[in-house]
Length: 538
Image 1 (cartoon, rainbow, N blue to C red):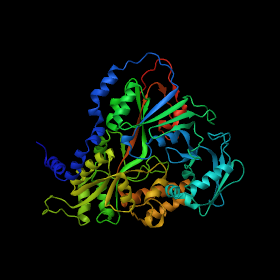
Image 2: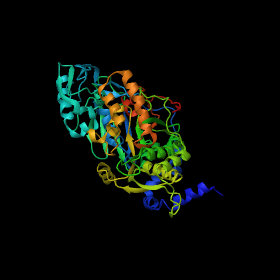
Image 3: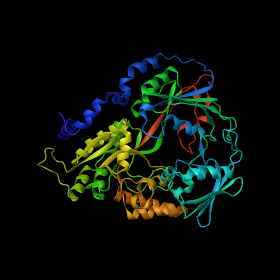
Image 4: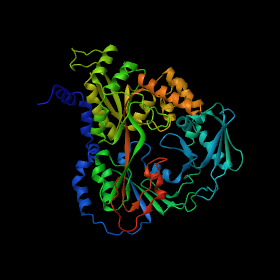
């Protein structure tokens, strides 16, 4: 027999989850994708066990990538986003530690008291149509990109640029209306022109339709000729069809392996490369919705969740606990500052101190308050995370109910503030500029703070990051901001997740640990495997 707590958990599953459960049962196809390790076991195991690897391998002239579009949960998974990673580049790129590193820019420096950024371009860079990359052309492309409202919303420092001009053939000058120290971070803005876009990357798009993109290597790529002549990116409706094609050898790489299938899919013919995404799962609150507008209540909710249990059950251990919006691997992050610990007793005390006492007369015993959490339809991991968080919050008397809606309606509702809370995977790293984008004061920024979070201390510290290029000042501000966001958390922070790519061992995979560790970015350095290949540990 189970304990009283186990009994309450069962009761909440039967009673409080009724609307969500009815919804999930109705969508069995989605559930099938989620539990792929169980439902695909017999068919995929048969394929894996009957696969006979030849002792030698013929070098491959093309790499075929399968994108299971049925599992798309963000803008980094579609076939066009994968193609962009191979064909389009930017002036800078953010490293794992949050610092910008050179890409098409060779170097940069500040003048005019931080109101002017000077950028030197690399030599010998050409676009796919043969056009040389020069400062006048780059200034023209950047000027057009900076003028677009969508780019100004996503890259907040672009609003500080008053002019972008060419100083000579290699030097670009950004004139600013005020110091904007995050501008080198935001020069991740893609540098391309035309339709379809002409970039400077190692591969150029030669065929494009809704189901397949073909990219041929660019023989004049400035870093060297890619070893793999052609990359084909195909769209699959489900992960099942993509994996079946992988194990049969029809495709060489699948872009997304759910956490519960990583160990299963890895074998002598297929390796799985996992890396930390710069996204974290969180429950964001509408700051105008009581009692969620109380910092005490939000602290209590952060203490009520057992993140390690969540990571173990939903992510199969393939995630890292998150207790705030700042990337923990950022060079300025202070790891000595204590974060939230799982303490349901303290969570109850905080809720009690906020005036949220258990309602003993309610049909739902021990309920202190309830709120509705908005969840996007067909975002499978979000649904599983939501169910686990719901059970844990119930143990401290908080009843989190769900409203699951199509992604278009979800996006509109969130932007218009028509929600109490929402569970999303939000980009939050590696630069502090990501947190700046979402969590600086809503009334003072042209960013994406649709949640209404306001904190004067946080606002002053965000201004330090905007205006200062001094490392000591930035580190000090970073530590203080960490503490402010712990005292007054803007959301219930849960986990930084991983992304896994499944790759056939017919290719030798190289990774660059300085920049993004996603192996897609280094495909141009891969080599077709020749001769017998030994199994390589992940």
